Amino acid sequence: MNKHGNSVKAYPEHVLKATCVSCGADAGTSVFAYTCPECGANLDLAYDYDAIGAEWKIDDLMANPERSLWRYAPLLPVHSPPNNCSLVVGGTPLVRVERLARHLGFENLWIKDDTRNPSASLKDRASVIGVQHAGELGLSTIVAASTGNAAASLAALTAHTGRQAVIFAPVSAPPAKLTQILQYGATLVPIEGNYDVAFDLAHDAAERFGWYNRNTGINPVLVEGKKTVALEIVEQLAWKVPDFVMVPVGDGCILSGVYKGFYDLLQLGWIERMPRLVAVQAEGSASVVNAFSEGEREPQPVAALSIADSITVDRPRDGHKALRALRDSNGCGVLVSDNGILAAQHELAAFSGIFAEPAAAAAYAGLKVCQATGEISPDASVVVLITGSGLKDIPAAQKSIQLPAAIAPDMAAVEQLLTRSGVLE
Ligand SMILES: Cc1ncc(COP(=O)(O)O)c(C=O)c1O
Ligand SMILES: [Zn+2]
Image (cartoon, rainbow, N blue to C red; front, side, top):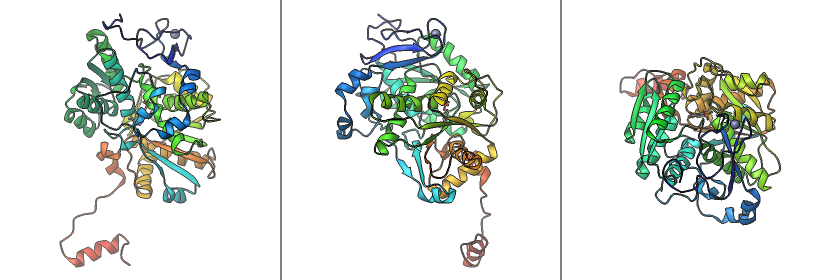
């Protein structure tokens, strides 16, 4: 019997351990622990790669018609895929962006377009696993603290599967994200405070009311959903590993998820090397990148402020794993200014047709910085992870464009405007 009152094992047989990233203790796989019982640090799930690899071959995967992330079920920490979820999470396009590449002077550039998930962000990958895991533990109420996307994502998945979501979000979150949450019918607890305050409150509420906690920063299951983006990238590149993957970083969970996906494939022997992971942060929210450049193992808190709300985080909750991902992939960190993010957002949209929210556009802004510093050379193959849609924060996107003044409805005025904008000579 677990503390939630049922006897289902927390994890399936192919999860061997839940290892503490700090002291190395094993929290076990029978009873679900969010964090290390010895020291409170985050946990990392370890798989039985020998058993998985013996039963599951690349050919099996290639023959599987499932397009969603459930095609990677043998590498996921739940007993079975959901039987109540028809929303397609994952399976997003890896877009070869030739015009953007030419503009930038790169030869091999891809965008992994995770705006194409059901709630328009990568967070759906974590939510769909979390909702299924909660269900397997017999829990129907799920709580999340979020800068917006994780909450909107959880709300979409709970709406679809008939569970209850309680969301703690800063009242300052972009209105589109708060609107999504309410449209999906979740209970919203708007907090007069920032994401970090909402995170702590959601954590306490989960403990107090016995809810499932979908906070990626501490729940080891969720990163396993995020890793599927890396599994897809490799499969979409026909089992070739890119030289670099650009990842926007707030709490660091996406970064550690991306690392875990490549790590799994290395362990299975399906790839031969890691790509170099590049953590991109806003200058005003630079905790992970600062810690990496100073060689620290844990990020120090900052007073975060940036236009890119989704990566504006005082205290990165998965900082330890994020820093390990950078070290172990021979990666690096890069900082981008808010103006750089806004310019990158517009350039990305105008040269690729992919409209990213500021946090996601930061990944592309980071590539431009790395090109300028020579960190990434133009003949490298690069995947830029676009984690959320530009439609989620229109006021931010409006800062880098100018809506032309309305004209009188006659052809002379049309010609004047077209001449001014360069369409006509
Ligand atoms: C669109 C988007 N990009 C990047 C991130 C950063 O992810 P993480 O906090 O896991 O580092 C988030 C997190 O909210 C996000 O919503
Ligand atoms: Zn520990």
